[in-house]
Amino acid sequence: MNKRSLGRHGFSIVEVVVAMAVIAIVTASALTITLLSLSSEKKAVELSRAQYFAADALEAFRAAEDQSAFESAMEFAGGYSSFEKQGENTYIYKLENSGCTATVTVEYADTDRPAFSLTVTDGGGKEILKRSFRKGDAS
Image (tube, rainbow, N blue to C red; front, side, top):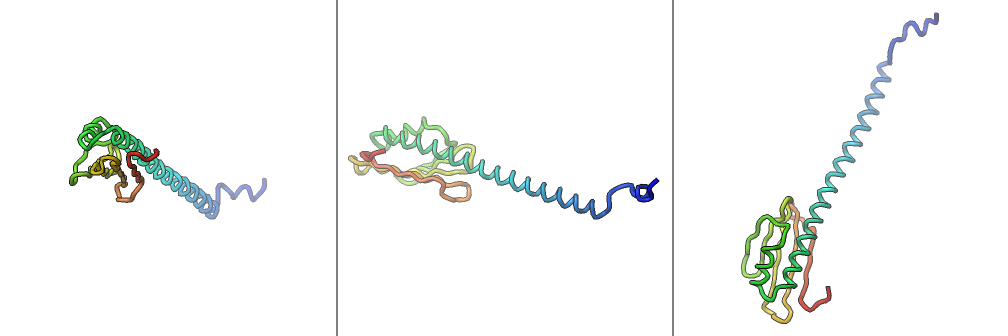
């Protein structure tokens, strides 16, 4: 029998440490990629919800002849869990299933060209979507 094979029954400590380091690096990389993916997915969902809400709000504004009609139309718009009116022309909507807030301002003072503006911010207050429109403008 060979003397070398008799005394060797496993891996050396250096081999074990190197293997553990490789496994740790691979695991950390996979975890980082997963966390970045989840963060990107959350932002995409928030932006998608904001865009759907903006489309509904703009459609309500286009269809409404005055502020009262806009308020009625927004009762049927989806995508928000609650709202409050601030001042005469500004509405704050909490978008459902996200930390986003939409601020909608409508100005019907100029009856020929009423104005609409919308800003959506995420839970941290960062602006993620902004739209403005005046009746009579091209879409």
